[in-house]
Amino acid sequence: MKSLDDIIQAARTTGRKPRLAIAPCAERFVLRAALHAAEQDLVTPVFIGDRARACAAAESLCPNFADFEFVDCPDDAEAVALAVDYFRTGRAQLVMKGLVPTATLLKAVLAKDAGLVLPGGILSLVSAFDAPLTLQRTDEADAPPAPRLMLLTDAGVNIRPNLQRKVDIIKNALAAARALGIDRPRVAVLAATEKVNFPAMPATLDADLLSKMAADGAFGDALVAGPLALDLAVSPRSAALKGVTSPVAGHADILVTPDIESGNILYKALTCFLDAPMASVVVGSKVPVVVPSRGDSERTKLASIALAVHLSNNPGAAA
Image (cartoon, rainbow, N blue to C red; front, side, top):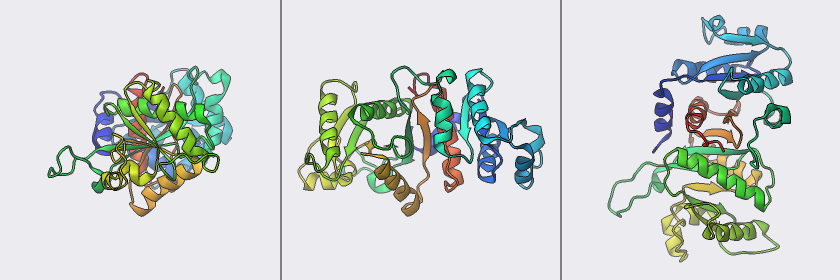
């Protein structure tokens, strides 16, 4: 797949519309996203939340809102738990967060009795986006730009991951990348410099150890390099000027940030400065979870639902 459009089209043409449990659903931003996805034949929404508030919010959005399945549950935390239970019992295939903190939803997903956490795994956020035109690499210098997808992780779940958690974050991103058809993904473990500077910059040491683990086969055939500053990860020109010859340098498919703060800043730099739509889902459980933000664009919300649909159609993609 070369673009978010490809993800949306693939999700639309699978021949099935998975049931998407949305909780809580009584806010316009999440109602609008779910109804748009239904109009695009991506999902069949199941709304869970305060019926009176939801109907009032949806009045100007969808004249036939009453035709959709609705579970009246005024308590937000109970609505989230019910959405997870809908997946656990097979009544829904996907889960989407409404207007509650992401931690509230992840707590329900992580609950032992939910049975959604994969053995030995962790949850992490994977965000896919269309590579900016300047980063669309080609094999020939005079060839036209080639559209491609890039992935960013983790901008929303793991606050300050240690080395082992970063291993799992990379594995989650690799599973998503392979489900998107990215062969032998190139992973850049980001830092402020390409030099190991410990203890002043602990992220540089983690990145160096992760690249050594990759050389020993820890990530299969994926190419992992670090530490790499952002320009070295994505700009062939910067890599050449600085004499960095790694096959990942200048050509990264996956950007792994040191912590949630740097990940969130990079994510919002892309969306705010470049107006770049993002397809973001929480992976690492038996179901990819859609976690839209009120500030996300309609395009981002639709693409995120489409990504969840696509990953759910690829067994093991969310693992």
